[in-house]
Image 1 (cartoon, rainbow, N blue to C red):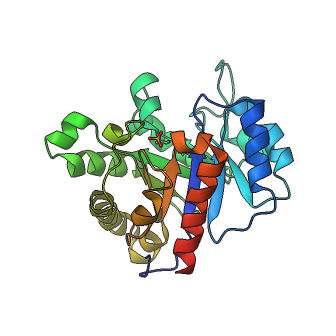
Image 2: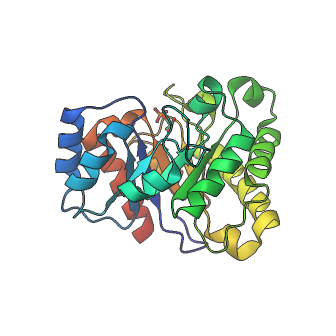
Length: 257
Ligand SMILES: O=C[C@H](O)COP(=O)(O)O
């Protein structure tokens, strides 16, 4: 149970390069008319955003993007800017997901620029951090997280604007081997302490920390019960609307309890 502050739980679905009209229809049908004591967002592929925004306009579900350009405008083929996402109706954007870091050469500096772009256009950045299996086994998780958090946030002024950080151990993504709630809490608590150094207690305590990596309806409740686990970033399990709905319900219940 999250007892220390009034951080509202947040659950974000990251569809990655998955989905289609059938998933859109079943997801929309599952969520229309539902109320949660938690913020819920879906990050579909760009091509589906507008349709989903239209279908979900009378729901409580927000739409987010899986990425945002570090460029503002110009000759950057294939890019989508923060301003465009905002104009389209997006509320938030994932930044620095490990798949983008490993496959698309993103780094802490590009994340830092993207965070600035997102904040300046009224999008809530969800900064993703996490160590790989070798780093986990070598027990240097906190060194890795420290570097990612401090470099990505260097010079980033929040000025009351919202940001979230998602801890996603790479070894837990898509493997079925979720971090234990204890591991998640330990890393989240470390991130919180670093945020206190960067932004002071009041701001740091208002920043929501999400866990991601093989989240399911069966482990969501125990993860959310930890003090510094304020939300979940869900990949595979979000592709089953009934399953994702159950995870959202756990988050809602964790707020009420
Ligand atoms: O963004 C989501 C994460 O990569 C987690 O994916 P997963 O739930 O399939 O492990």
